[in-house]
Amino acid sequence: MARTDAIVLGAGIVGTSIALQLARRGLGVALVDRRGPGEETSYGNAGIVEGNTVFPPAFPSRVAALLRIALKRAPEANYHLAHLPQAVPWLLSFYAASRPRRLIETARIIRPLFSRALAEHEALLADAGALRYLRRDGWLKLYRSDAAFAAVRRELDLATELGIAHRPLDTEGARALEPHLAPVFRHAVHWPGAASVSNPLAVTKAYAAHLEKLGGVLLSGDAGSLHRADGHWRIETTAGPLDAPAVVMALGPFTPDVVRRFGIKLPLGIKRGYHLHFRARGNAALTRPVVDIENGYCLAPMEQGIRLTTGAEFAARTAPPTPVQLDRLLPDARRLFPLAEPIEATPWMGCRPCFADSRPVIGRAPGQDGLWLAYGHAHWGLTLGPATGRLLAEMMTGATPFCDPAPYRAERFAH
Image (tube, rainbow, N blue to C red; front, side, top):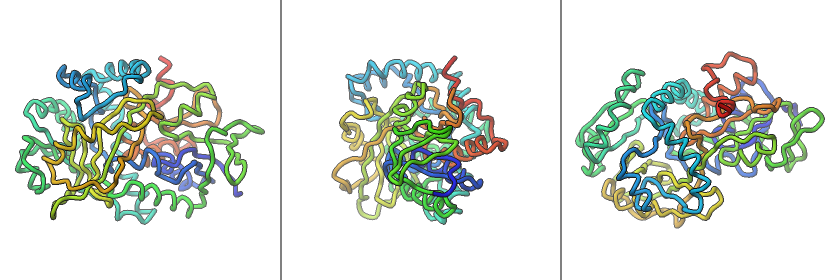
């Protein structure tokens, strides 16, 4: 095998983007996974490149919303009772990170990554010959009540301060953009700076194919076999053992299974999520993703159909699927948009890797020379994959990073 300077473990959108960014800088790269590129968590997102993001998701502040979740009546969240003891420490940290001052602080910290998100995707899509998947129509967030829209005022004010374009709209203004939405909402905000892709899986596979054109290799292997050997990192693959001086952990929700063997234990939480594709009735269509804020779902036009995505489910990563949120939100989704029958018989389920402070970990692994971490991207794996790849590639090659990587260091959890 040709020289291997770096092994990237995990062929989701984050790992594939990292491998591609390293290869673009002349490194010999091997991308290793047990499955094909983009076939795990990266497959099931809403396809939105959220360069416009201001505030991260926050812990519910209204008692009514908390009560609805506790009684398992909420479309936006679900939980497994048996998992709550494991989830409570993370939820308490998430609650603390959701205080207004912390949200504003987080918004400023994560802005440099998000501000590069779309440009880095465009560069990789162009190189990979995959710009056909990109749509520059923004996305719509809908608010069914005056109270819900009033609650977003602080976020809109900060967006204005940060120079992030947005357009508050009334019902008819939103329906001028998406005529097949029913007037069951009172307010909307159009974020024109966001983009979306029509097939997230195809995008990840296009990046992987371009990696191979640049000399990178895709290998099947088990990340659990990673170990030190002869002063290098070694991974066992179906093509035999592979050595490199540097290895990147980009295994998303599976990362803790591997890194804990090297003394790394970071407070990662898991939010499971589901999606199902539907046909539209008659000639109904959507141009851009639409989010029903109060019910916690997104309708996203995809090549496979209209993708209906759920909010969060707090459950063990390996617990059997319980897609009850789809049943809870489907009546409201159908009142908003004329969904016909589902295309698949079974919903897809995936696991979002989330740190409570809504920042990924990007950088060196504490105490492990040549080991790098890139995980915990929560709802933003697709959005931040290429920007993360660029930041980490710059750090690994000794270039000047395009933004300060300090806020994303693993050591922040030692405080």
